[in-house]
Length: 380
Ligand SMILES: Cc1cc2nc3c(=O)[nH]c(=O)nc-3n(C[C@H](O)[C@H](O)[C@H](O)COP(=O)(O)OP(=O)(O)OC[C@H]3O[C@@H](n4cnc5c(N)ncnc54)[C@H](O)[C@@H]3O)c2cc1C
Image (cartoon, rainbow, N blue to C red; front, side, top):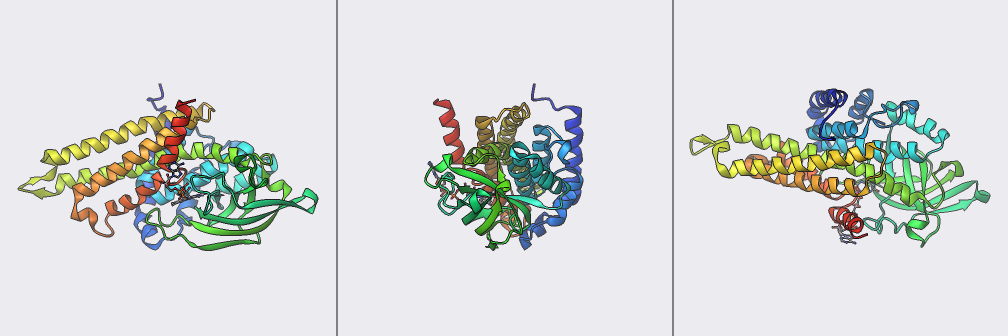
């Protein structure tokens, strides 16, 4: 049944596709070349309800179902991988988590700002020694002032949106050494004294994402604890399950854009007196890429539908992200082959997609991490 989109989902997807084509796509090359965070594009996205897409209207969100959200991220990803990642972080990793685990006061304070596009959110989990092993948190949260406040101290790495974020969800060990059993989550204003933003991470792709390392020595009130003390790691995993659906969608957008470029080039480029689209070798590359993307798209729709039913869908979201990111990588690789020197030229669209797509196999859990989650579930 999940193969059929409702008329509302189709209308929303088409509206976002127009925005992606008219507003986002014309900016993609500049975002990539300058590496500047696209605040104006994010604000424009907010006016279309693309921040807090699944958040309840009570808190200013658009109250959409998860598949609509994923379709929107795919459309945006087709135009700019960077904008899609930024939206996925604010939506899945921050806004959804604040709605899921926050108090009404926290929801009121942060969700309205995020959904209006007044600011973006960041999710600070990774550390130098806590990548795939995210439970190995060395940032500490120590109770001070008789329990009225916490002092957060440590260093976070690769924090997307950090350059512009008005709120960050920071994970820290409240019981050092107890790994996932002793980590808590905190809502930290982006301008809190004691946050030192290090230089922008100079990345291969998704440039302009505002990724930064953060040195933290911050005091937060106990009312800034998100959810229960020592239960923050489970919250991080909850958020990432939704985030992986979004990254699967983003990857499909990038892969589809690469396939579009390959088809357009194959139709017009002539060799041996014929368009190269008439050569079987080229046709097979296009057919394989299209088939892999569509198969992964079905997994993404399934994962989004499971999430829409209110289930966590850990295994479905990992399968969707694994399949979509690898299919998109293959599609970008095949597109490069179809375009050959025209794709390999610095500044070509395929060259950007080829760099951007690689991140989808790394962030929000590497492909190996997704395989670990799937295998663990299957061998229970
Ligand atoms: C562009 C970008 C944006 C990011 N944004 C954020 C963000 O907003 N917030 C945030 O917290 N983090 C963010 N990250 C960090 C990202 O989540 C980590 O890079 C990712 O989890 C992998 O960690 P690592 O890079 O330390 O690799 P490592 O964990 O060091 O892994 C290295 C290699 O070993 C493999 N490996 C590790 N453990 C195992 C195992 N047990 N079995 C098999 N293979 C294994 C990995 O799959 C990988 O191939 C971002 C990263 C990038 C590149």
